[in-house]
Amino acid sequence: QVQLVESGGGLVQAGGSLRLSCAASGRTLRTYAVGWFRRAPGKERGFVAAISSWSGAGTTYADSVKGRFTISRDNAKNTVYLQMNSLKPEDTAFYYCAANPRGNWINEDNYDYWGQGTQVTVSS
Image (cartoon, rainbow, N blue to C red):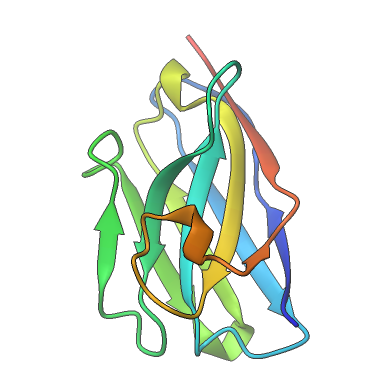
């Protein structure tokens, strides 16, 4: 079992930055790919970014965040981060991290463990 806890959300003005953290306990996170998803008000949850297991050499991003968001991992801290820059009001959402043991990072059905989420609100 892997328990995931997100933190770092909050209220920020458009153009600002936030860094979300996804801290794991229970088992090491290094053997899992980790993804970030978000659910905006009135919308379905959607893929944001993912990072490969172990070294984290592989990453992928949704087109809407490419060039603005960066996902990274620190295996020594059992934590994955999402650095969000140049935030826009449309980035307002509840952000979740999840652990994926099998692949196809964009499909949330491949994620076994989910955190409770953290709210990000971007004001215009």
